[in-house]
Length: 403
Image (cartoon, rainbow, N blue to C red; front, side):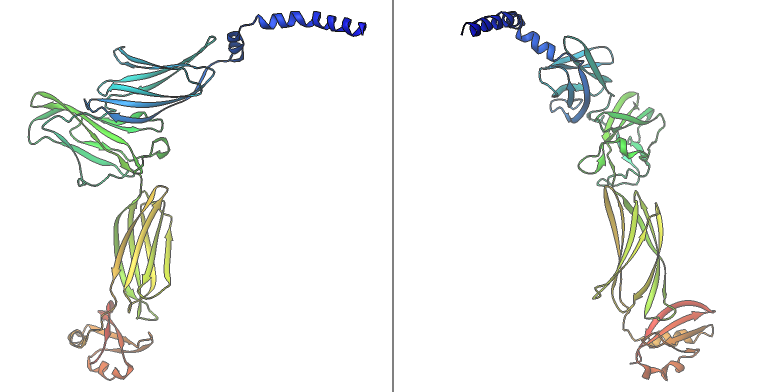
């Protein structure tokens, strides 16, 4: 028993200095020692821009900041003339959302983000170019986009010409600027000009831009000039549509099939912009099967559609697609009419330069005729199809019923 007491006293003697030393370290020092790392700003992104209600020349921006190594974060805006705005603070860890208010859209500015702790500091800066927010247009001028009506959204895949409608007044000292919103929310100047007219270029690197809910890249045009001696400025939103668009579909040729004139072939040209994949689908009325023709060429494709039933109404649908959407254009072709073509065929065959090839309803060739009376003897064959030629060149095909 005496031996156990001696061992216990020795153990207390050993542990007491350690316990005293530990108790002497304040809690704050333990916390600081645990966070002894360099602060790091991992990501800064402008996630929203809203025009101020009281003055459209100003706007508010929402800035998301992701960081490590600190709970001391601040943000402030600084304009090109070194005037600083409100300083915003945060004591949160890892993530903070700053609402930067009353940013002047008429000035170049920077948003500075600073993360600090007792050991180091990290900074990040976002540049804001003038014109990022909408302003009230100057009276007497407006921006017109050529070739568009008021509801069209211009395509991102082609250039667009714009000019100023100045109602006949004298307009000089033109200065144009076009900006687009990048993925991080910042607007970038894409093109500038000092000419009377201005061209918005097509997008060449879509991966760098932010795509909004309407599948458009946000953009805006800024114009400054002198109208009858007075300085004027106007700003207009000009988003660009990332979806493809069919610009023209044209039937180049429609001809009966050589082996069966109750069917015909169609050559069709399709023009489009922004389409990575284009196809044509042929649907015949009351026919469950469809014909499908694909194409992977850009801007233009020629399709050869085969064996379309002339006795049925036909729908030819052209569709072009990309990663953002699709566009479809449909052509309707009527069925061959069952009209009595006796009079018209009689008149045609009175021309010595015209002859006809006659087929039965199954597309089997019967004979060549030069005169109208020759077809009358073939009426017991039922419905006939007549291919008409003039000067040895094919003209058209018609259905013949002798009533």
